Image (cartoon, rainbow, N blue to C red; front, side, top):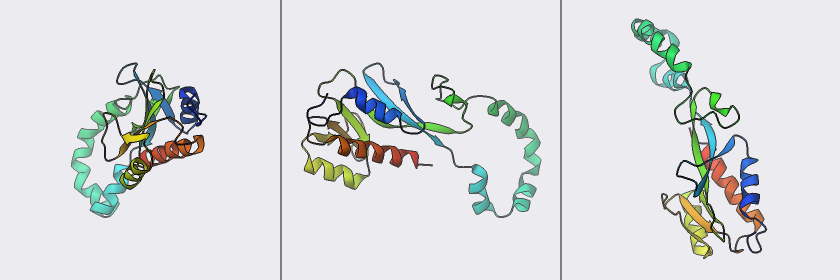
Length: 173
């Protein structure tokens, strides 16, 4: 367990995996646990409505290509989305979207090193306030912090930062 925070690797992992649609992956090898959330894609039809006008106008412009696209679309809809594996308890059956990472833990490091996404202003504020918060290790330094769990931040603060990262990533479309 981390000093004073009350949160060790397993407690942090349990909290992260309790969040809706969160899963664990190891895309960078067994040294880095990556926690992801499924983010559904925004409907292309709703984006087209605003840009192209009424359904009738859009239909008249695309009627010639619908038959040609139908066979390709039928094949594509039967396949799983790219990058989604079936190992997440059936979550790979989602229609459209992508798994986005919101937290990383470097395995075997003591104290625990937790990387979280954050809005840029909060990222800078945390680095200025806490010695244990530094620019994200091998990540975009503007949006990611690596937090070394030394006890400077308590368990509630760490959970709040995890939730902030999760909310930030899961609201992206």
